[in-house]
Image 1 (cartoon, rainbow, N blue to C red):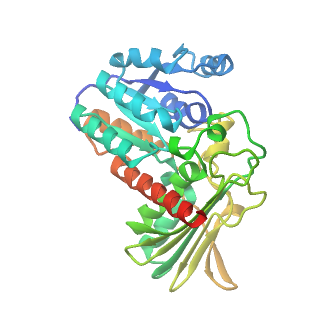
Image 2: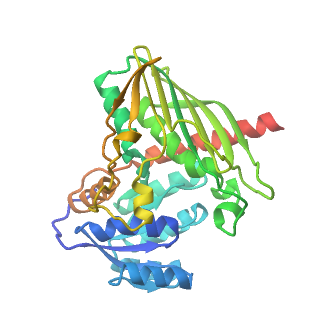
Length: 352
């Protein structure tokens, strides 16, 4: 990444102002002085009104095409759009000379991922995939415990991310197919796979069960994947959009001890309530929700590390302004896509 001495704010545009753009991207641009939010594209009048109210300094345009036509005036384009358009939009942004952040799911195929990575390298621009769950407080706590050797040698890592989605709705996640990057494995699975690889290294898919359980569904909404890491650790990853109840978010089993924690990192609900970074309690897990370390009945509550989603965009700024490495190497994201493709293939083979 070329180094620049430009100290002006990073001129930024966001494509999409649904949950992703509104909750997971715009707040970090708005609260980090290294950035300036110039353009937001959305085709929804209601979302356009929300964007104008929350970010009065930004200009709202009605389509991705309008924003991309002006990408040459931007330093950064954020794709908070459906996965099946990421390749086309990312290539257009690189051609215009902008850096690019892409929300997960990265892209539907390894071929698409390689094409975008090559385009970024040819343009000499940043490509970062928004794997924000690397900065969940509970995940950071596991990293701390592993670094301390508190659990001994790990043999099993269990990660569960389940929600109750109810009936299908009129949204791209419920109307597009896995071939377009849709389904719970591309969605929540992108987080769980990335976290497992970050903790325990390269892995192969040992088993996969990807299922459509809701009436009328066209992509998987309930899934289980077993990964066998080269390190010997086995990861059990469970994700669902049809779970009325859920198990522990994480359970890590080692030769000396174990760690378990319930619930989800609280940064997402804070952001949904417009309690942005810097607000009281942001990223702080109450003591009553801390995880447990120990064996059998000899369990001890351990503090959860502060959640730190803003660190991703701090890394983006450092990459663009100072030539630092991408906060999420796109080759890591490519490996996630490779595993998802393999999981779909294995699941289809079993069902055939």
